[in-house]
Length: 280
Image 1 (cartoon, rainbow, N blue to C red):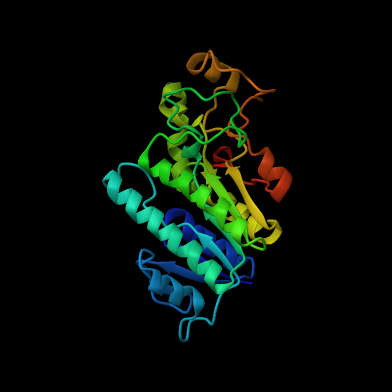
Image 2 (cartoon, rainbow, N blue to C red; image 1 turned 120 degrees about the vertical axis):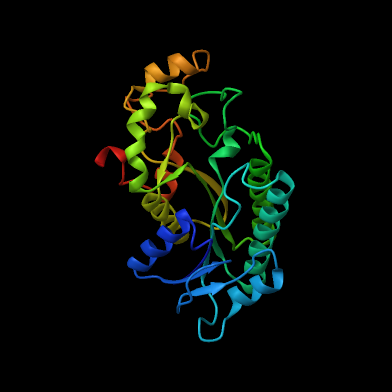
């Protein structure tokens, strides 16, 4: 399977490209910057013509792709003005999705975001652990775009019943070099309450993408993708009692189990995170 990965030079994208190639896939990286090689194409995703050309065929690079991983975006609120974030991210995603349907690419996995769950949880979540069952609660322009992208995907699969789109609501992406900072989080539970003390190792993010591309069924689904544990050494019961004392609990919280439920991804995709900051 030849897979195009947008945002291939980013924090998550670079790991995804490496992991997919190591697994034997033919990977074409697409981004606005990067090192020219046999597997990279420089492209501005806000230009629809460039997107169609880059996915459809590039002389001496490829003659079309079988699947698409869309990770490119302004990656968080506050990096650029809100209007720039909105215009860039929604245009890039529309162009990528629309080009894929025009070219007959039927398998798409893309980066949605944990932010659609209501981050930074200044308004407490409806219950803990959070999951995919309650309506989106975007609290920023960045998150609003992520919600609109999911709604766009819903309609695209309705129009194209053979199309599979998996929206992966990634938690805060981390690499091993980031883990040295984690022990300090225990000093103040409010430092990381904004996403219920969650994270995702980029290597497990790559695993989730591969699973979505290989076992995802036609239609649209969204999945929370997080590590199996929290960023904290302190137990969940203590953290929740201190920071979210009035939020209803749904089931056993575990000692350090993720409070961003990954049960749907485990059940439907076979997602099984292998990496924890505690190993480092």
